[in-house]
Amino acid sequence: MENQQNYQQSLYQFRALREQREMFENQLQIVNASLGNLKTTRTTVENLKDVDEGEEILVPIGGIINVKAKIQKPEKVLLSISDDIVAEKGLDASLEFIEKLIEQHNEQVQYIQERIQKIDANLQSLSQTLQAAGMQGAQG
Image (cartoon, rainbow, N blue to C red; front, side, top):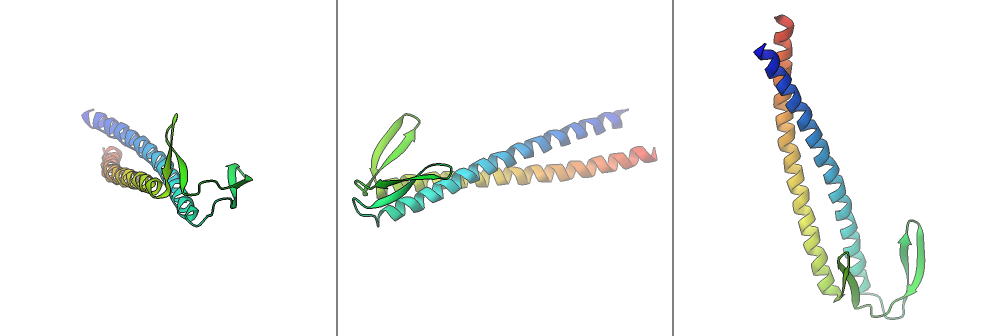
């Protein structure tokens, strides 16, 4: 009877860990997508250094739609600090801000990957425990 309870408890832990792993995988996808956007933004800001005032560029406005726009003050960009705060910054200051965000995202990716590795190790251990308990149950 006690073996059956241990088996059920291990099975519950296994399922909970699998759900937790899936949650971390989803979180990793979100952080990686955001990281990709930040890297694209960094490249775009770096490319602005080569743009002259009055030069025409294409600006994406969503999906597959772009509009033509003329650059004013190519040495400055409007940086969204939060949902309701926008600050005008120089290109170098903006790049520093973006680099900090990229660094934070890389740290998050590393943390999430470490958590997934720990969960995988626990899942493997629990899987072996469950298999051994299942074999004992079949023999008993």
